[in-house]
Length: 502
Image (cartoon, rainbow, N blue to C red):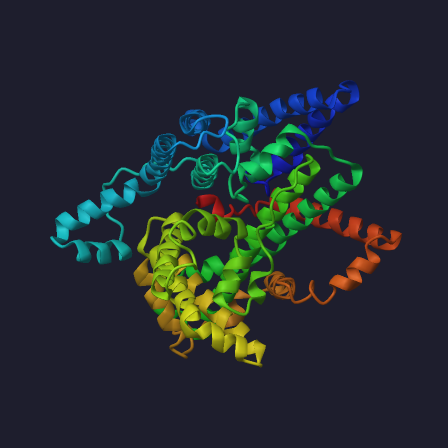
């Protein structure tokens, strides 16, 4: 079930909110009220999951039970009460490693089973592993069973691994509360596309939380603006972007149209994903939760390293804490740091998808992150003309989006060729052939709202936000965005979220 859907907005969310706040009318004890609400949230979250993946619901519940049990096993094995014996630590490490391996193996099975099958077919056909990889990057093999990927498995796996690692490192105590733990892994507002929450962040809120009218208002506000980003901007530019990227013959596009398609997708993926995140944070706010931020105007970054501190923040911090730092982080020689970055971005690519495109996408960012570590970062800091830094960063990011969006490696190569061919479309099309008023308006607002407007106006907003006129205008704008988004959704402009596939 998508947040940006009529079913969710007109049925699921309003019914849930009504039922969620009913206990407050007749249950006076805060602890009991929170428990009743948690039971309701767990039921709603499992229903939300079942709508999107009923066949895998049993696996999802099994994942929750497995990690709940293993968390307790890790803590008990290490010795309760602070036992610091060497044998206990070794046993706890082994149990933790087993739990992590099982989680990773389940993710790998569903995410890479089909790719492995196709690779075997191609190796048999070509007689060479490397040739099979190249062929597979351009043309998937037929006749291989496609194992359906469970909903949200990438995000829940990472939350589970982080939980087990944190229990082992004694950052958190293993949960002895089945309801709290089940809700930690299944809370619907951050289940499908994150943000990726840590147990230490979410568990205290699951045990005790309050929500006042102002928090509810801010949550609703965030939800409405997130809906606008997804439906009014991302979906609108996607309509034109999909026509360009879906062209039968990419070499016929011409440079102008190819660049237009790339700009459109650059806007689409940001507003699609950040819009979903805003809706998740907004829903959490309406329910009394404080969900982690996941974006900080990444397209205003002045380096690739800064971009990854601003893009998908909870994923980047997960890789930092559970892969980069355990490998040695930045406390090792420069050559080892570069290797650590290579590993992190390789895994980042693999996490996004089982294809050569995503691997190369990750390695592209690894390359420039390494270069910035070696010498480029110093040059960027010394450069007084900061717009040059911004253009460099945006150019690298957009080149990465070609690999991310193209359906195959061959298509990506052809698209790169069109970007730098500096020629017109061979079919007589122009940029205007793909643009109408709605798309141009969405592009304009999309570019302005990437951070170029919000940052300069931040102080102005802080001065005005408590004034009645501002609140009235802001509320009217929210409702207008929500209403227009619903009109478009009812009209059939549904477009599933990009990161919902991961």
